[in-house]
Length: 87
Image 1 (cartoon, rainbow, N blue to C red):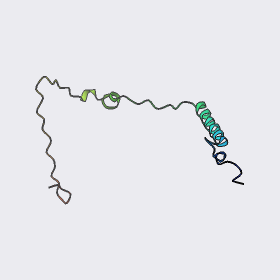
Image 2 (image 1 turned 135 degrees about the vertical axis):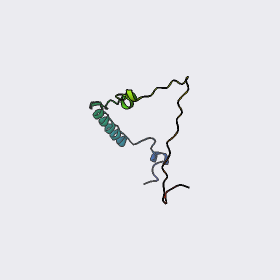
Image 3 (image 1 turned 90 degrees about the vertical axis):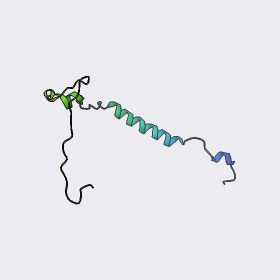
Image 4 (image 1 turned 60 degrees about the vertical axis):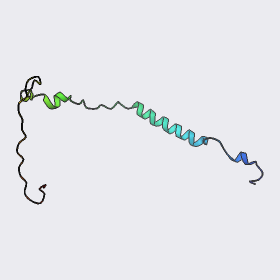
């Protein structure tokens, strides 16, 4: 039975042929389906100018940094009372 053959014959090197053929066939089918599909059309994104500035050009304030900049102070924060106030 088990002792009639040599021990080296029971070991097989490499993958088994049937699962390998099935895997190659499955992958070939998936690639064929994907290759036949239309390309994905992503919506064109707007540029940063179109998103943030366009239509509001008159509200922009341009400063020349070679000249003295105006004095700017932060607004006074409202005082919060209650348990959540920081100390």
